[in-house]
Image (cartoon, rainbow, N blue to C red; front, side):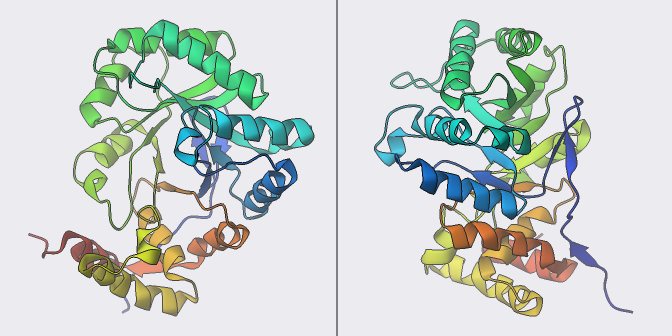
Amino acid sequence: MSEPTLATSHARRPLGKGGLSVPPIAWGMWRFKGLDVPAARERADAALEAGLDLFDTADIYGPDNGEAFGAAEQLLGRVLSDAPALRDRVVIATKGGIEMGTPYNSSSAYLIKACEASLKRLNVETIDLYQIHRPDLLAHPAEVAGALDRLRQAGKIREAGVSNHSPTQSAALMAHMPFPLASTQPELSPLAIDALSDGVLDQALERGLVVLAWSPLGGGRLLTETSGRIVGVVSALAPVAERSGVSTSAAALAWVMAHPTRPIPIVGSQSLSRIREARDALKVTFSRAEWYSVLVASRGEKLP
């Protein structure tokens, strides 16, 4: 009898308790830049056509591209202004809590101000998922929870999540939250595997958190670099990709998605072809042996 395979799920899943649902793959906007609104609209349309209707951005996206703080949000806002009907087709996730030069600020006053600024840039009345981008070690979790509750009570956000938080940091925040956290966003890829063993994914299973996986292709290194470790990972992915008739990058996304938390990889490409190609991940299945072979190649040593 053949070994059962680990298939990626095509199903949408609930985000929080308020009726939102999200697709199995998201589109990330870290590199969403420029002033060409029609071209930006074309990228957004390509993502929607591929079923990537969860758009993940952040107020800090901009300076890394040589643009102003908030530039990526502002560009998405211009697209939504140009095509208002898109708003009802998109789940908008953004992040706050990084302050230029500080670097982290999750005080109540700052989070509320940051969220209101994001709403203005995005040209929306409500943010579907508002995430604390990185933990502020000087902010009491009760203060953070209070700010999120105020924003939710005012109708400015629908759900709240965390990004780059350890399980204990998330637990401390959840202990003070008057409503459940909806999501957690760790780095997770065949090259970044800490979330598999540091408790982040275990906590997501325990608490029912949606997992949003940032940089699921290792920041593009899986496609461009040729170090020994990366060659090993690509070699382990290659037979799965070939059998499934997809690219290695699609197989890498599927590897992330095979975990029982059903992580949602955030595809950050701004290339129309790569955005469309992301859906190929749904064609891929892994055997347990194949999945673990990728993990072993990433670790660079055998499992215990």
